[in-house]
Length: 245
Image (cartoon, rainbow, N blue to C red; front, side):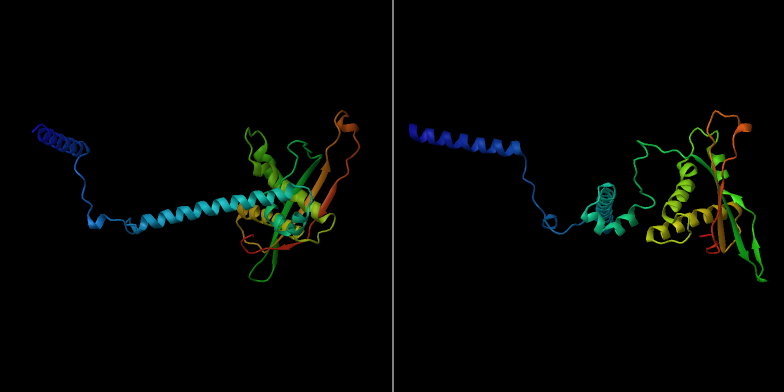
């Protein structure tokens, strides 16, 4: 009887423990057939937006990686890889991502330049109308003078376009390399866009004239200084679209 009593009491205690565990854990949720694992049930718009976001992030990462590699090949010492892919490197870097060391070794201009422009337009009667000279450099100077935070465009865009043109062309106005052709178009488009924004008139041809005057050395009175030599360079007429591009 003792064994039987012990067995019965043990069985009751085991059942109580099981019941207690079940009550602590709560009822077991019943899984519905439609909630079983299956294809993504999110709306199509959400999935499309998520896929587009992932694609945009991947494109940005690839573009950033390509940019870093090409700029590295541009600034690195000459090597077989940079020589082999120099057209691709130069096509990506110039003129927007040009790298140099002028921040640490600045080379300020020792010349004052007047970059003048004029346009030509053929009217319906066949006569050609040429506009007076317009000083693009004076517009930049007026935007910089007395301006606490002058824009980078006003300070450097036109000036750097001209110095790059001279570096690739020298004293000739004939482009002899792909980079020279690119910089010629770059300078032409800057001048055409600025003229079009200034007067809004249509024109088919544009011409630049650059007057260079060296900065006189300080110290001597202006009256006693010898006349500084000037360079007056007239570029050929360039064909542009009627909208100035």
